[in-house]
Image (cartoon, rainbow, N blue to C red; front, side):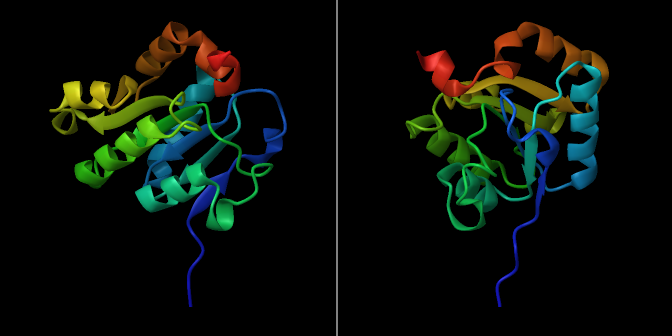
Length: 160
């Protein structure tokens, strides 16, 4: 018997033209806080949360329960919590960075201060910015203002 992955999808706006967000976060409360702060900062993009790195990879590959790109489109922005296992998080970042379909995704690393010891490695692997936990509205607003195109266009449009 296999269990279904823990997935939460904001399906109310799945078909709109905004970029899709993927949140890789095992703690649903932390994911909820991040989404709430993003909305308060003016970002109401459709989103999906997965709890594990394996689920994130399956989502990005469009495999298993994530096979429908209509329901699970490629995200433009990935919020990645490195804390459960830095090693697996770095492996996922390496993989994302080398895949043609995902290499243009914006990686936002979410971590506590103790978890950001290897900032240069994160940037080498494609991270665009960091959000420190606990999340706060000022930092989220700052990120949204510094990267306005990330919330409006798809990776395909940014490549063109």
